[in-house]
Amino acid sequence: MQHDEEHHRLFMLLLRAATALRMRDDDFARQQEIAETLTEDDMSDRAAVARGATLLHRAWGNANEARTKLRYAWHEFFRRFDVLLTPVAATAAFPHNPNPNRDERTVSVNGKSAPYAEQLFFAGLASLSYLPATAAPIGLTEEGLPVGLQIIGPEDEDPATIEFARLLAAEVGGFVPPPAYR
Image 1 (cartoon, rainbow, N blue to C red):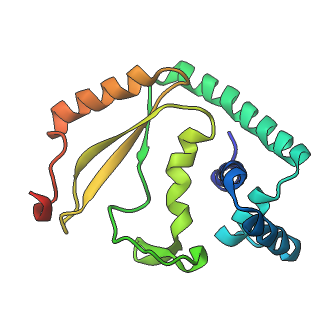
Image 2: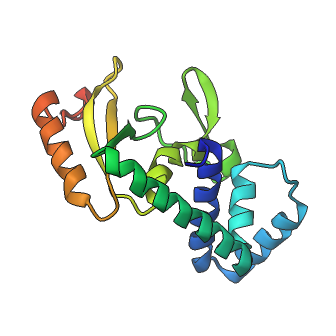
Image 3: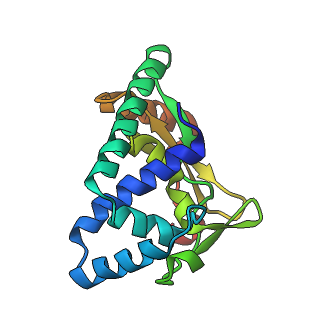
């Protein structure tokens, strides 16, 4: 398997390439301008959007080949394990941040400020490789915020993750709305 950072960069590159298809022409032109100014070590969300939006087909093909190799690695993993359990995100629920500047959006992770886009890491773990994932509630924080668990399963085995979530709900009590929403 690829290292976590490489996996996340590949996910963000292909995600941003896919979402750029519906970009307006003037927005695409702006992304081209940004991409021309990027340094190789710029890993900001702004850079990820510009790189993905302006990705040449050959580079997309190479990225897609890397994704295919990951899919085969996951096939091997799921020969030994039924599901993989991960957090849904690096934090419990947090207040919405409507700031349109993606690089200024941050969340607190273990008391430190982290880029908002890093919350996509666990979703990308499954999504990049066509793996089904089911989010299940597992309780509330001390502050009453919901916490979830992501159940990832083998490709084309969606019923396995859903069944695991059903069994988990029987053990932990299922969804309990936060106090402010009861």
